[in-house]
Length: 200
Image (cartoon, rainbow, N blue to C red; front, side, top):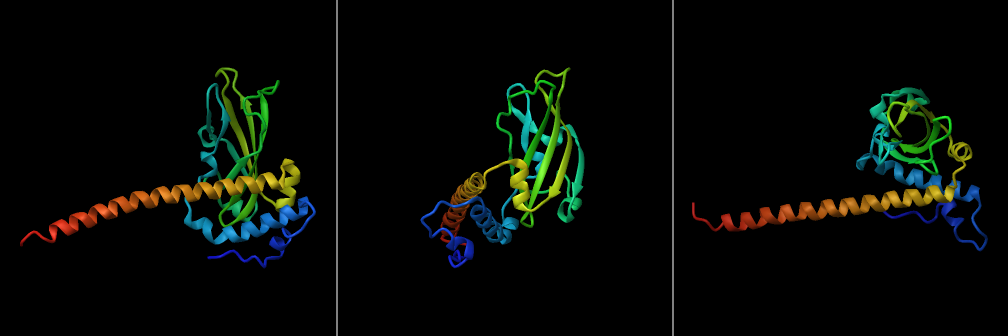
């Protein structure tokens, strides 16, 4: 399938002036529409599998802490930490422990079937476990992209770069899978060629 370069928001690229925030949001919406029929064909991680909770030397999954989950929206109300999608934690320094031991981690997500969500994880560093950050509550909200960008103070250009990186990773994964499948197929072809010459 080819990209339709006649899309209005793609036409906005043909310009001399820098793109404004509204232009980037429009392009991201076009990308979302383009991704929608493809999201079901790729293996996407569950929200609960996201490693964004700090420990002394690594990050651990959200679902390990069995946090309380609050959901709003049609998609969110049917899924909890099991919802699959593309997720980007919006913290700046994961190892920066707040003075009061509490932290709020906003996570921007694009979930099946191509809906934007804002996930808010509230955590608490544990006094009895050194440098262990425990997820206490998770709030999942379906919101329009401009509102999510405003709440997370993230750059639409940065989000576009993150999505580009994700799609490049899909290509690499599929290329690796294709090469392994091709090796197996060629092996069976060789075996078939040899055995076809054996009498009986």
